[in-house]
Image 1 (cartoon, rainbow, N blue to C red):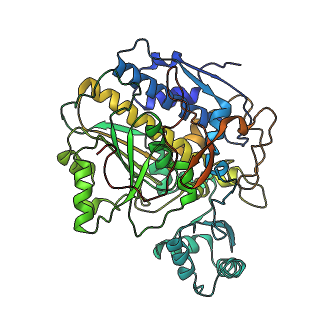
Image 2: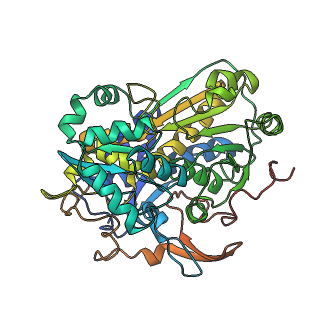
Image 3: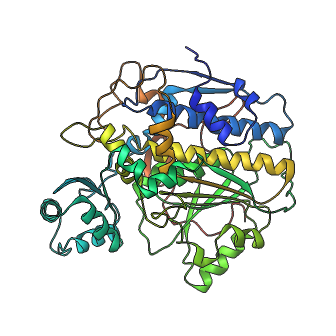
Length: 480
């Protein structure tokens, strides 16, 4: 059954600086119930996909000279399946775990702390900070040693000790404690996203009559893990030539790339070396969009500030994503969805008196990813009208603030019980993820994956190519 325009969709569309009258192009439907939670997770999911779809339809209208803007249909089952895509992806029927044994909650002397150790270098830093020998710790032995080390410390002691060593740990807080903290105050004072014109560069005319809104556009994808890759995966769906670039010395999960690499190519470049810098500059000379997802400060030494990029390639759209935002005392800290949930009070709200809980999906990552893609699409539309290099910024912590403090529940939400990671969703009456999954051959084997939730009349229904082997493509644009 269709429902009226959700408040969340309206909030996000206004935050994007878009025309509110276009909201009447959106309708909703499809089986729901796959993301039960106390917080309005389904509303966040529906709203972020809705505005991304509408921004795509708007840009398609501009490029094709098509009026009115195509209609958008938001299907709850497609949205839910997409928000669970990282957990549903399969290769030859094989599953994978997104979290390592050391990425979990731990009891401290005064509460709970959560660590993130999915990457080998983060695992090594965590063990080193806690005085656990890395060469002797594996599996259950490592878990036991870390548990004993954390049990003798306060949650804040663990957080600060691990962060000082370059690792990742966050003390669990309630929403009230986060709201009173310096970082929480700074986050609450920010808009959901920022979109700005940073110069008067002339508009580089995109050819008209394109079949897809991003056809002919070249996107440099400097993102990792989930939120940024979800955004660039969406741009690839809409016709962009997306080239993901990673540092060869930083490991990446092929299993994660199976999900987020749809429609893209992937290469590695060492920007510490002259050859890597030269190849990157050659790619930048022909780029239309640059998307970054590293912590603030990580890429600046390579001349990748918005201002420097605008000088070298006037008329770019630059999109930046971070965990904590570019403000407050945590502005340069590393972070992931699971850690933001813990810091901002989500884990407490979704938990029980005995233990913290989690959202039924990595909803901050997925939702921020679709918002980031929407910001890029809207920037391209505004460029078409008035030119200028454009800058879009989002932070996972600000999306969390939206979820906790500003979103109203969708119909039927707020009735779920906090449970363990990934335990909820697939069995709810009416929702069936299998209807929104498909299969194709890929370089890794038979790939089963979630179909895209972004949809509008006349728009694409699948990616033009499956994910490939991470880091194995040449550092050139498609067709070059």
